[in-house]
Length: 545
Image (cartoon, rainbow, N blue to C red; front, side, top):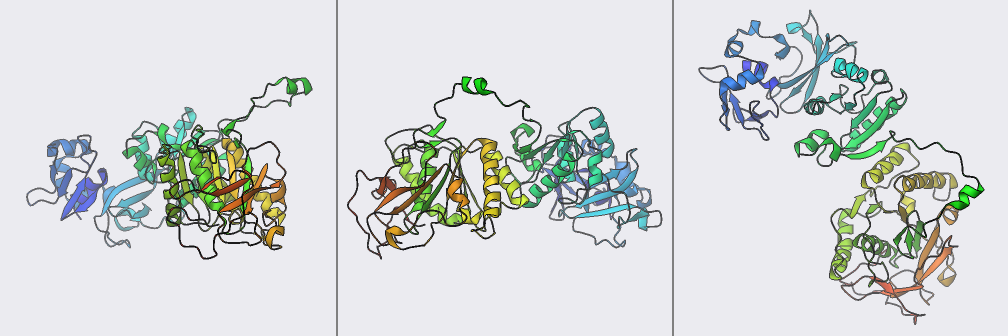
């Protein structure tokens, strides 16, 4: 052991092994990247070299140390920073580079969390009978929030309390002058007793941007709601955690809000008849005039292989680019679109959407950055579970789409598709999401096989609830042929659900030319035309299901 690993490294940030020594951020100047080299010298216990020119004496002073501290015999060194080799804990490369004290309400040390240079964590508690006064098993040591006295005082002062997933994140938040805390052990280790210290407080949870981090944030939120806390969940705009977000130069105000309960709905009585009729309605809140209104629920079906997925993709790109999906000469205001694809892989979609993006650009309708985004869940999601329902609400809240394209429907829950219970639970979540951001929904669904030919129904397979739930049910079927399956050059657009309002869907669609939009309006009743059952591959668009 040395003064370097026992005293100096625990006080530095961004420590990494480098050659025979270490690199770290210099504490003297504003060091955006590690520019301080450290090692054990021949004439000095520690050799400092700041590549920005800071003097070793200034570095020691910034660390609260002196040359005399580094030269003390080992038995005189503060044992809080010692790492015993033979106490049952393996000595890790680089030693401990940070320690975090967990204290009780009065500041008495209960246990420590120590971080190594290779990002491993160990916990220990004071033990008069242990090696060097420590034991590496917490046993029945009381578990508390990190920096508990500051948390208690912050709640008493009415300050916002910030909860991160780890101690390093807490320390980076504290540099902003705010009150921050976490639990020991990382994600999934929150205890109900921690929430008692935050009763009726305003709490901002800084979630890590991964599945364990998001699940942890929900666990903490649910516990805090039980004690009357006001809760907001944030996720970093960039990177994995709030430290990455801050290091990239962003502020907390730039983080994405994925959940909040600090804006309660206004309590009011229902209007009486005169009040109700006195309201002057806006004619429509169009996303696409005449075709798609904010809040609409549309289920799109079609026989397999006709190109309903291509149609869904075309609608999403057109809406984001600011062009009418069918009347391509008409400009519309570009709208934010979020696609959640539960069936196709990222590589498959890149092949499909690349052509659509190029078609939009060809007509001077570039999809601007941020207007169209996609999430892939190729294993599907189960909106009958709380975890996936919360996940969807968080994603939609963060992205604030005006059009949400999701599906296909059979991939949105894991139960029997013919059962109404799971279908009802699924559409309840979709309605909750739709209402949260006031978006329109476009969902693909498969048509049943049933009878062959023209007698075959284009209604969605599964629960009959899908016939009643959407405002609009639209399907594409082969035009004037008894054959099913495979691509058709022209399709009929058939309304399998009575429309709740007037919409201007085309009656027929036909394939566009190579390099143009894949679907365009077929004027009039077209002459039936069938593509051979084994056509050569087209180089522009892939017409699949």
